[in-house]
Length: 182
Image (cartoon, one colour):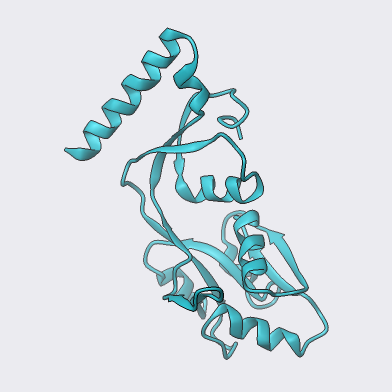
């Protein structure tokens, strides 16, 4: 938000947070500049092991027979909203979380959009990662919405701004790209 608003020229964050921001503000000027290739995680959809489903569309089919909306917990509220729309969930409710989101399933939420390195914490909570399916193409992506790593992000306006700010931003971008390549 600070980069998009022009309060910061550059920042380092996970690409997951940039995706979440862009899901809400698709015309935001915040953009990824350098993949730093650090802190890799997968963004996944998670349900209780007790729920007999293997992908997002099966979740939708289970909930068609129920009167209440699907409860989706996530610290990525905008990514979770997009996931629900992409999978045509119909009635759903996003429950914003912070911290140990796994504790929400199954009592307080039906589905979780979460990040994981190995999946071991998810498994320890008697949960499972489900597949995602892109209905328009029929393309099945096994158990990962997308992968995230640390990125340098920026507001492109800095590169057309004052000479000192532009040169500083270009130096940082160039230095980080060079460091990642080595």
